[in-house]
Image 1 (cartoon, rainbow, N blue to C red):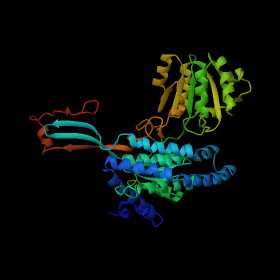
Image 2 (cartoon, rainbow, N blue to C red):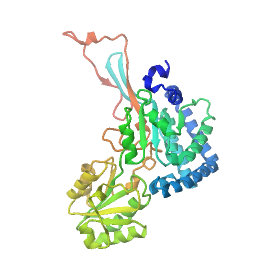
Image 3 (cartoon, rainbow, N blue to C red):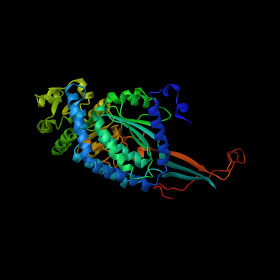
Image 4 (cartoon, one colour):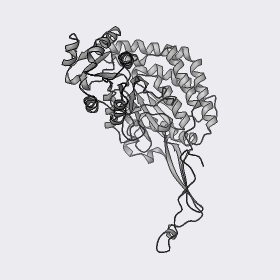
Length: 455
């Protein structure tokens, strides 16, 4: 059946047909990759990694050209400084991307796993097994390295993916995709059309209307960007709208540790969605901790804003406003608030946080346990930097994004987040009628998997 027949007539206009052809190719490829052996998928990933190394010079040259263009966009107010920072590639970042691809190779194949094998009755076997989602549309701003992460996860999970980077990253994305495709061409068993790059906003607008043909949309970018996607499609969306993270320094914190964690959580990569935007400090430790923390943060170039209680201790802090508590700066700016208790810290996080990543610094095990149990976020940390909220650091190899929704997948979405499952029932002519009525045959419901997943 043609796509024009499958789709509403409004989607089959001449301007949409090239995209529909791409989606058709992606769906055909997904049917093939869904059943590819693990060895073939891993060979494809190794070929991708090798090609990225071989094409390093052209990739970095393309990125330099993007950066030159992006610098003018920043001057014109068309691109934020944080987006510019995420755009930059170098040899070190490219090496990390290659390492991420190779880490995905070492991970187990999530496709075809038996999650449940249950004998309903003799000869009537129910299985729940994992399968790829199908066709993904992934739209991201800046961060061309996201293209490589997503491509690697798509290959391992047997999904097809249509990727669209921001216009500021166009040349970088084209160079990366060219390298990836050069690698995949070395594996004849891997189907064409599984990984495709979109290059225009018109394609994105059309893609969002392809309900029933695209199985999931994953946006990565600013909160306004993610909200635009959510409001303009009926396709399921996996994404987060904000990365408003907090670090709470408890009254029982180790001060030296707290300072180091504050600096790392804010300055290691301030443009990241897992960098902290607000520092909460217990009033009992504030006189000792706050002046030292302010000094360490200012040495890293951080602009600091404080509430009235903090400004009593450090008078030259910029006064914080109500808006500061709900602002994702994605920059070297940090708001500081003094709290009187763990309860007050948790209440502030629950009111202003985005359910991304929250952390506590304390030597009090009971306080740490309460924080971990009561704070509702995808990641809740004790005595660790919020910057650890990352698929690569979690050992997922890479991530397609970080989900702050309550339903799974939640947090960094790696391989397991890109598969679904099917119930498969095998019988020998079994009839429901035999299991109903006064002479009903009883079900046995004997599980053939234990809680370790082994028979």
